[in-house]
Image (cartoon, rainbow, N blue to C red; front, top):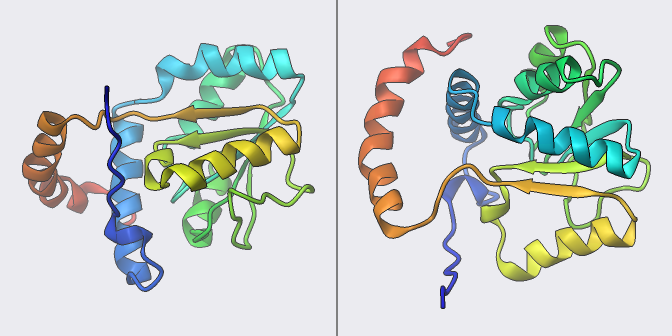
Length: 189
């Protein structure tokens, strides 16, 4: 039996400096885009959108928008040409989202903080959480899912990284070096 231990991440703390949080999510966004990490889920998302009749995606916990532009482009190429995506987060990255929206037709964003456990009913669409669900302790994760059920909307939770000890050890040792090497190539710097 696996026991899930919930550990915090510094960027989840309310007093964590916004500039450092933005830098961390920018790095993750750049890497997920360069590696096209979410391409394998595109057929599943398309199927879910068609099955639920949802014409749009509401991305919760979007960070800086990550690979959302690439996922949107893949979904449009896969037969959903009018699909729109709305980015939301408890800590909105408005300047990053604005830049992303300028180069990504069909992308919009909510400027106000959005709590994924109590999404305002006016924010509609098939809900998606990319690589952020692990940030939540079990009661909060359950509340996120319960809110989707309560509002009768579909939700997809997509986690790209494993959480086994050897995977975490790799992240703790290789990731800091990768961040130092890759960060200067992220634009705008």
